[in-house]
Amino acid sequence: MIIKLTDQQEKAQAGFKNFVDMEVVPIADAYEREERVCPDLIKKLAGHGYLGAVLPSEYGGGAMSMVTCGVLHEEVGRGCSSLRSLLTVHGMVSLAILRWGSQAQRAHWLPLLARGDALAAFALTEPNAGSDSQKIATRARRVGDSYALDGRKKWITFGQIADVFLVFAQCEGKATAFLVEKNCPGLTIKPIHGMLGVRASMLAELVFEDCRVPRVNLIGREGTGVSYVAAAALDFGRYTVACGCVGIGQASLEASLEYAAQRRQFDAYLKDHQLIRQMLTGMVTNVKAARLLCQHAGYLKDQGAPEAIMETSIAKYFASKMATRAASDAVQIHGANGCSSEYPVQRYLRDAKVMEIIEGSTQIQEITIAQYSYQEFGA
Amino acid sequence: MNIESTSAVVAEKISMANDEIKAKVKRFILGTVRKPDLRDDEDVFALGFVNSLFAMQLVMFVEKEFHIHVENEDLEIDNFKSVNAIANLVERKT
Image 1 (cartoon, rainbow over the protein chains, first blue to last red):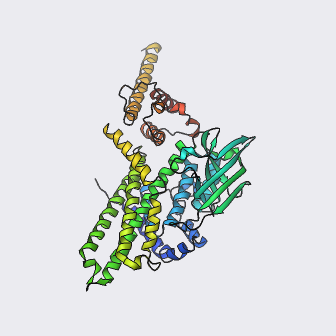
Image 2: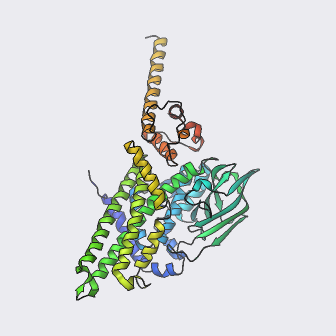
Image 3: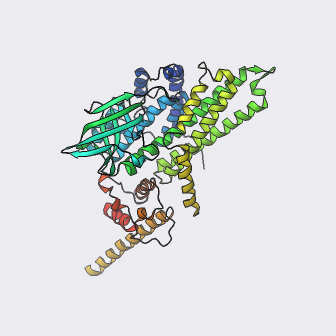
């Protein structure tokens, strides 16, 4: 048994790390304050092929394995969780089209998404339907060769700039997925500002009023929206959020090590105080543990193993809680400096908290994972 | 060997394959659904043991185990609701 990235994966990791250190870290705090990711950075992300990382090469994608894709999300998450969120939602929709789209949908959308010529967003959550996604209230009525959508979607990551949305609605009582283009008549996009974390993820509320969507934009079949289309997309979402959380943990650790080595109190560097060492030890250990859980989940995904779904939930649960704890300790180590905008650790903490809420909250994971353990052990 | 006996051998092979598929499917389902006396025609989704992730796990299982690709047109709940239904789907796709 070898638990180690391959040479090729390590080489890819070095490339991701270099991109993040050169292009993301120097500007992440500034654009996060502006609550937007600059278009230039998205172009660079596309230019490196990161937006199409998981798509097959026949569509212009990078045909990246899930393990390598996890490393990409960790590295980008280390620099900026908002930017990582773009990779996540864009990948979720890309994979949903790849998995459940028609041949015509794949041929049209996947090359655009792989190149980053179109950005995609995932529109499931509603003002009154979060964790209980089966209770979405947006309605789709069949009208001739179209569907007419009515309802609202909220907290849609990168909804402000997405070109196409994967929207979930009840069609005669059955959850169904549709591709809706941003300029579709009857769709209004309202920016959301002032969030606690991932402030540059350009959230939007989508309002559908008799929004006509051609029948050919149906993804999957009527009734397969949540159980299959959303389930597969959310699995990728959980995996990449988990990996991004490892990045937050790593960033918190690196910032803390650097600060503790230069800050002196009581005539000694912070790093020599035992209680600081305790916090650093927790970070080191938990970051490594979360990374291993993510790599394990990624490996199972690459094998197509059904248990990958639950192992991903476990990785997401652990990694998101770990990130919140690591970022909180990083702020603690930085003291007043950690609470100021001069240091990024406050951003890590705000972002980490969001990670415990999205893609299945900590509490939803606790219910699901416990249930899984009952099945595993016949309890 | 005459034609009749050849047909009988082929029929037996198909039948054995079908039994094997059912056994594998049942073993997988029983890993989640704790009902040792599960019947081959019983609707596993109606039993209330499974959560929303199980549907996707079933798809992944049949794809990996039987080397088939589940497509849009296969996504009928009737294709996945019981051991018999899944075995029939696998046979149709192989």
